[in-house]
Length: 219
Image (cartoon, rainbow, N blue to C red; front, side, top):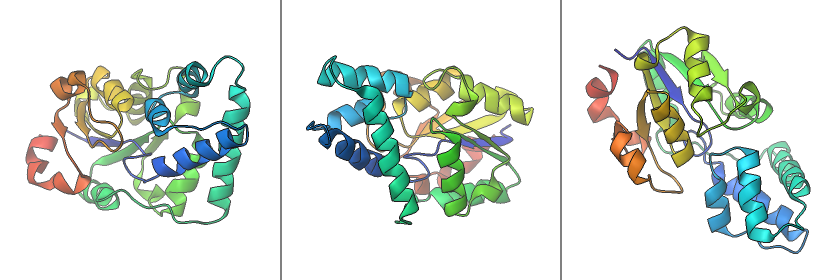
């Protein structure tokens, strides 16, 4: 019986991935580099350290990766400070509210940093729904390691069998599956791997599509 619903954030609740991509492109351009979409796609949902390896492999050993990450963060901070719109993914807010109104515990498990996670939850006025928020600052091993999901369940005092997870990335879905949680995938940038297709509970094109399966998802 499901008692807890855990959401990823970037690419699942909020349409932030295109914003991050633009920030990386601008940071790279400052050093005369072109940051391709395919490289960004390979970095989605994983730790900064793992992403750094992909970036270094692409641009070469002379690349100042810490500077690129720092400038990307600064550019994103500027985006947040400018109060530009950050959109919900289709059906995201409605899904959070739906499960909350059903009396389920709602949690967030994100690879992002706490400062940005809390800013976005507050900006989009959904922080009040979440009983627990776990970020990359809270774990030693980021997604695809299951630690962020296992820690979320521990914080809420629930068994992994009681947890329903919604994820968009391959790394995030792998983490949830490895944690032995009921995992639903809503891909945004990259389609699920064969492993995810074989092990996910459901795959949806949008969070708008989940309601016909609600009984199956929660029982």
